Structures are given as C-alpha cells and as structure tokens.
Image 1 (tube, rainbow, N blue to C red):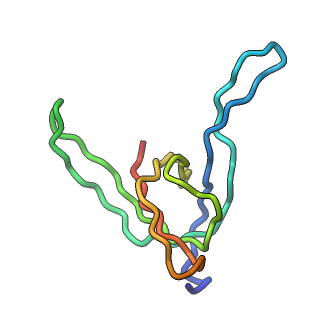
Image 2: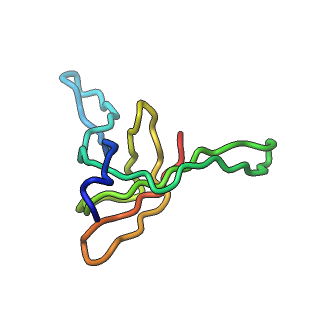
Image 3: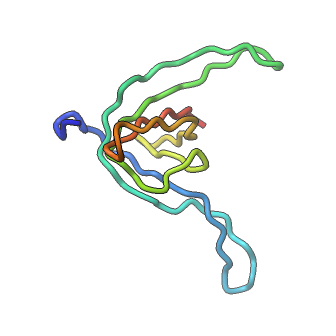
Length: 103
C-alpha cells in the first residue's frame, strides 16, 4: 500500500452510550480513528424495494489496518456519514477495504 495514494482523510466513529450528570443516558458517536484513505470505488446503485426504487451511494475506502473496527461503526467522509457494510482485510493486518453506504 503506497502512502501517496492515501490522499483522503476519513474518521471512523463508534456508537457509545454515556450518562450525563443527571443520570440520563446519552447516545453519541465517538471517534475511533482518524486515518488517511484511498477511494477505490465510488458509485450509486439503484435498488427496487418494497416502497419503490431508491439510490444508494456506495464508497469503498482502502486504509491501513485499524484494530477493532467492525460493521457496527461508521465512516465520516467529506461531511457525510457512511454505514460500514463490509470489511475486507488486505494481507495479514496490512490494510483493510471498507465498503460503506451513505446514510
């Protein structure tokens, strides 16, 4: 993986529950990692669903290995939030391809 191709910056966030001073649970997204990424593919796919046709923006990001990343996390890129749908490891903890769909 060449460092020169990692020309974008993304933030990987994890959903957490915290409690405020009054004991009320607060659901927030906390930053797990801020990393450099390469955009492998960026496309829009149209799906036929029960309520009609809809478009999904799909992006595949290639990053260096991030320990503990999962499909429950999300990616923030260019001001948009993306749900992680698939993680494909590259080599032995060398990198990972993140397939994500815009929320």
